[in-house]
Image 1 (cartoon, rainbow, N blue to C red):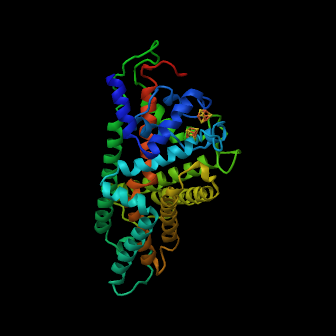
Image 2: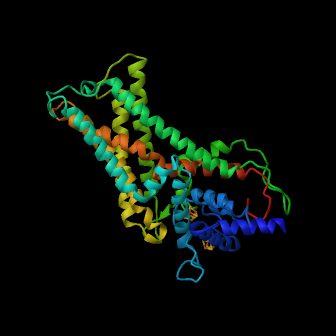
Image 3: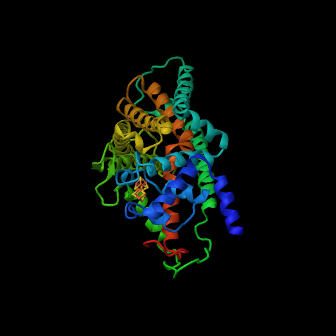
Length: 392
Ligand code: SF4
Ligand code: SF4
């Protein structure tokens, strides 16, 4: 009786997108046709009812590959109107702001993601251009790529140190809030049937990292890829995500190596075009041009039934900032020994700062939450299944 009352309270607490995911998961749990497509369905089979935390977990486990919509016999126009990718996308977008820190910034970004991204990038770029202008002229004699002649090293280190620390703290608070709700290793009562799973969690972190780095679940369950425009499968979404992610990581590695050069090896920038920081940064910049451009191209062609139309501006804002970061960074590199270098540098730094300031509130956060959901999935499947009805 008490359990029924708790379930009723939970059902009342669910609203909007969460209630819709719970409804569709009840149908999927009876059907189970898509069990082998991705991690969402095996995770679903471990539950008979879905509370708020379960729904947030499943929504972030979903990679929005579209496969279960194109395979579904209950998809619209069927009266059941099952559209799992869209229902999950709505809730996933909600989780970015629900768990965001500070919450007000999360809510603001959710409402005006694209405008906020572009306003922050232009505002910061203009501010830095004004700082350059205060030196007397926006143009200067060629400086052989010496950025520190424009903005002193300590000024740059302070500005980016503060922005980077803010992004890390905000993301860490967001993901720790999400993780606290999930609590994947709590003891679940065994209600029926023999338990499955070893109950040990060794190897879970490795499995989660491998799934995240390979984007395993953008393979559609068969390895042929996602559905994008229609029933055809394509691996381009996975490839462009990889170009974006590894491009970003190479740029980050370039910054780390340059920091080591500066502080440990006492080598001052500018570095030669054949030096490790420049090679890493160039490779990363090219990846960050190709990846976001490809993702935008796919985003514009995508079947609207796959996603939440309200999130498109936010998605495109993030893609635009990533593209602008690499474009302006490569422009600075190409024209680093010319008179508008300071101007280009100011624009690039403004875009990078805007990117880091907005990272915790939009599409970047989905990567962090998805890693947490994959880790929970890897842990959970090693736990005894309290229902023992699923395929694991
Ligand atoms: S998405 Fe459709 S076909 Fe797939 S499990 Fe759910 S109801 Fe069944
Ligand atoms: S859209 Fe893809 S990843 Fe999401 S639930 Fe469906 S099959 Fe799984």
